[in-house]
Length: 355
Image (cartoon, rainbow, N blue to C red; front, side, top):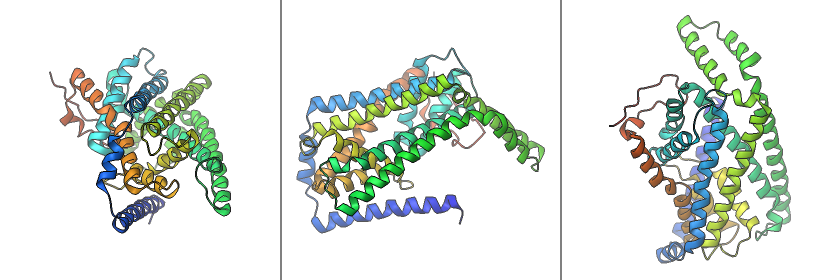
């Protein structure tokens, strides 16, 4: 078994364990649907609106960050193009799951007139930046547990604080690696091409073209000013996410008593839980939200489930109406979007447009 398969198996095992635990709690304690519905129905409309507004603002932050990555290749690319493609792309993810991931880089590459591979590089860079922020948030969450409503034992407290320090350090290492990517188009790319000399001419030329386009997509990392902007927009985006999460907590009576530190702790675990997606099902975010709120804060299973569902609606479903409207305005054919190749492919299909 390769390391990749072993890692996937470990993630799947963790996700299935979380599912089994929630199902066990459900069966042993019962599930009061009335309490679940009461949690959902008792939401404060003003705080909920603030939560949705903040989460929608993150898409503008993502578009601004992507425009920085796009600028070296297409300096005349307009923000509204990138923003529209971002909203449509995330709507595709909600509707199609992981199969919708290539939609955003494809739409941006088409509108900006750059290669699809270069925008896949931007997509990879975006994932690295988001992973960096998730690690930092998770590290902060672990280190702040002692100042929150959570009251772990001495051994657990020492463990989580040490884990927070390690996560924070790992985040700083990721930042260093991010800065190091500016060397990709130079010696690193040359070495990769030389290592492929054993391949036949046709596949080698195809891979070399992909690496060249990928290197073009990484041009923004070679400018200190661009790198600073990428990090700044990433911090802004995740600050908006944290604000949205806290606003949702204030909107729900059972979590309104929790402090901003508590919301950061839950968000840290939820961000990490986003990795635990069951193939074909998903649900890592909802599961971790339920587990943390029940085990750390003692919320009833029904109330925690209500919070998880509301966060899913705010974080994911809220963009769908906007994405559908923009797709209709742009004349995007959704049936064609479903057949875009996955991000690791170098073959670009034709995307039909409706009149």
